Length: 127
Image (cartoon, rainbow, N blue to C red; front, side, top):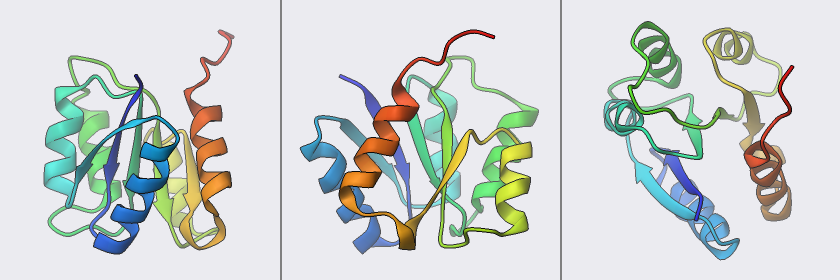
């Protein structure tokens, strides 16, 4: 079973995403702030990481910067930024720090979320 780490401080959003992804057959672990998320990411072994931008203790960009400086010893799948900002410089910065993609929280419905996650989990052909 593919394991997804959801780093989201908003309880309602976290519960909703967790329910949607579990119903689609994914194993979900959660973290409620950036420090907890970073600690779990460094443990490694996640197929996908959904990382909110606005987090207490350490925001999503700081988590990405820390991972770029010191990658986890056990690898993870792609990191996808969760944001309400569709065309923001933060998205560009996150992509430059290693995020694979982003999901605009206000624009995604449950079916789109599941489809996006499945697309990200499909192994990408080597270039």
